[in-house]
Image 1 (cartoon, one colour):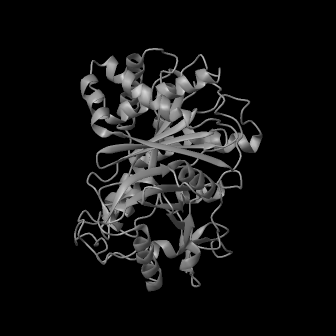
Image 2 (cartoon, rainbow, N blue to C red; image 1 turned 90 degrees about the horizontal axis):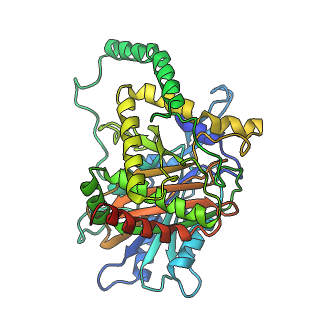
Image 3 (cartoon, rainbow, N blue to C red; image 1 turned 120 degrees about the vertical axis):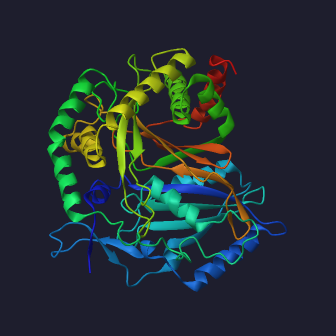
Length: 458
């Protein structure tokens, strides 16, 4: 039986082409347990593959038919082939991080097979320091960033001595339970709430457009300048990643009454300013970043853990300002203003207004306008909170967790950050042709964090 797919999920299938893959990914670095080697870890994975147990989420494949009136839905793959989805790769000598990032760049450039469940996991051997890596990619129609991190947390353990853990794709021993009897919403109350949401869409749209015209924060912007990032892109990707201590970032936020996310955005703003200056391509007007806002509820872990629930805030990055402290103030003010405005709406209204703000991304390519008109924003910068304590898989410590995301047509660079344990990892995913020397941005991020510390007196 074909299960209906929510429209927010099916959009990622409808918008996908060879030049625009719509999957997200993560690179995980593992330190083998004491006394073990990467070969021992490989044997653990071989044993896990032999068990051939797969969670329901990872058996879902997209399909549409006459009975669904051509709409996308989810079907169970009755010919599921685990060895197609779980693969092994080895790095060329000398097995540095440079070779690892190059491999992930290539793996992230290829489309997932729509005739099968939309995910792959690659065990990567040959790192010079004895660690091993895992690259996991999954279609955005199946999960968003928050859902993916929740799945990761459920796949691992905080106990370094725990053994006999199932494979990452296997069913969990204890799946989330249904809500207790009596906690389900009353159907009549739910219908009234949805009616109120619909009635409120008109005023919400009017306010959103009015704020955009007045250059105030919200789900829409009309002020993003043209830049070298806002042109048609190819399907080839380049990936760069690095982590910074979370205490340094929190320290800047505490000293300036800003949030951790504000500081992350300010780091990106300063790095982008330096990068564009080095390319002689810095616009006079400040860049605008689309910042996803998770709308997952506390009960979002129920079911199979998939789905998408994301709104948007448009953030002024202050890249026209030369002072790091002034840029941080501009970011903080813009984000606070946008969040205050979204706080007056229901989740349904936020999704609707966010869709309006993002709509040019779908319309411009169809009308051939990408790169000719002002973009709705200049890039996506996302910060997804991750596990706060060290995690292990059968004793192997997760040393690093680096996100890979989706550059869009007219949006050649995506910056996604993930906090894990005592660090914040920045994952930069760019169009290989459009964003040259992507690695330089990591150096600029480091310089900007130091400049922010100096600006706030640390």
